[in-house]
Length: 488
Image (cartoon, rainbow, N blue to C red; front, side, top):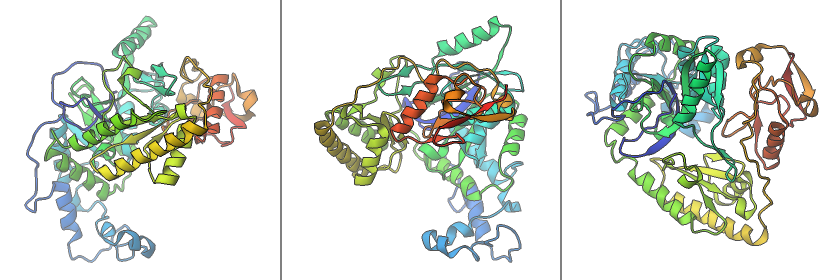
């Protein structure tokens, strides 16, 4: 599975979205210059249909209960007005059906497929999570093997529980200075495939997380795109793209119908159509300003004493780093990413995308403005000047490998999820089989996955993250004094 992003093929990489697929090489364009399909009112098809339906003078005897905004809660209308409620409509005949599209939803999805170079596109209202789950469920039956990086997002692990697939993990490169795991290489994927073949087994699919623009161009069969992250659709809205005909599209549709709400939000669906239309107006240049601002910020930060900036040299086996992601390290001024973020947010009003143990990642997008970039740079300059003079860098504990590189899987995630369990102290948990999915969040990369043998290194890493101000999710005991293990 390869991740997709949303910019033109002429640029190296933008955005991270999860996807699924077999490894192959194709020569195709991810984005194509197609004139946007607009209705007579100049709006994209689904946006136009929603507008027309909301403007009808009708007596409404249907859900939702706010009745086209007439009974919308005052506390929320004072904040956002009534127009979102007026357009919050159910699956009326003129608005089409997400699970059997024949009208404006079908037209909107078809235009998205043309733009991104896919053979078919599905709109998602359950975020990229439901797209990943559907992609894995559609390609992996119970007992079949899925090759995936060990630092995959939590949604891929939940898909293993839902599908009953058996994980074949790839341990990615790990950069200790940054406490960041990188991507996986084609050679690592090939090695995993060969290891399974030597055991008389075969991989059903490969799941890869990648910020590259060329996921479909490089042969991914399924690509799940977090449209709301880099483009301008509403939060929780994503797309799933299919290339070729290896995967059964009817099975994809059945999986999505199983996973998605039967009452999809037309505000989310229309926002996907609108975001597609926005991008199609100028796909070759739409990200230029955002990338220029990110580049200028990176150059400025590199000149600040005590501040580190993530660059290609940190991961020499990978050709590029997403130009719209700026990852800044603070360990040379004696601060963790969590501590630096608390200062930058509290004192300068800078809100980041991702906080890590040693770094912070800032996402640049189509709405990023120069004033906000200057606020970010000013805050980091003052932070560095303050702490580099009063606080020496802490003595770093060197760990040669990632905190999950020595894991042993005793049960597949699905079996561990449904196994009987008990709670033990943290000291007693070493050597037991984890019954919980425990991970620092963000970024949502599990340190312990149900079915894995608990190691001292994993436990120590979780305590280290918590001591630096990080949040640990998934644990029944948030203080980590106990862990749920499987009765096996």
